Image 1 (tube, rainbow, N blue to C red):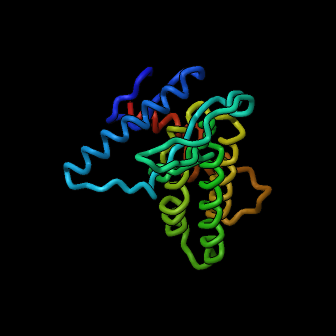
Image 2: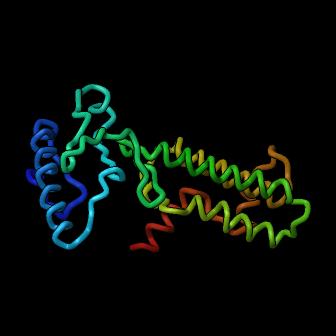
Image 3: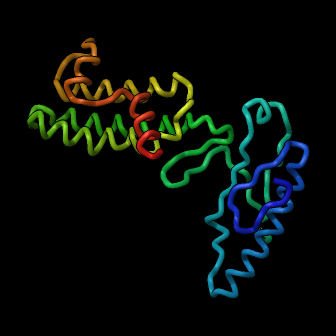
Amino acid sequence: IKECDWSSDVCSSDLNEIEATIQSIEKSTIYVKSWMMCSKFQMNKDKTEAILIATKKIVNSHSLPKTICICGTTINFKQSLRNLGVTFDNTLSLHQHVMNTCRAAYLELRRISSIRSLLSLDATKTLMSSLVLSRLDYCNSLLSGSSLHLIQKLQKVQNTAARITFRVPRTEHTSSLLRTLHWLPIDCRIKHKISTLC
């Protein structure tokens, strides 16, 4: 996009036009600020974040701009930022998002595991669905086309959840456990989400 519309929060550009695009965004924010002031709103510049997304090759090999000026405030481009609970990095690999999801899920698994002996099978399945699987399913359609490495990290979380549910050792194969629980594997859950949305 050669020139950004002021109402847009995402702009794209060729590498050789990146400076012009950033200047266009900076100019657009002046119009946004003036509209907000007319409508008796205030811009919170302290909460403003920006990210410059490019391919890994470009991020590693080119000297991309480091800052953008929003209404007189200089903001550094971040390596990653959160939007609606999803962590986006500057190459859109979603690696950090998967790491955060796994960390949060394993925390819940440790908590459930510590009281598993006091829970019935049905209660455990309910806890797993609400506290673990819900995290794995949240915005998982964004992971379509992601590397197998990332999908496997999430699959390990689901496998651990199945083993804790049935109180079996780590060496137990999980395919039959997942079938018994009626839990689709992670890659199938992603396809199911996209199919449902479509």
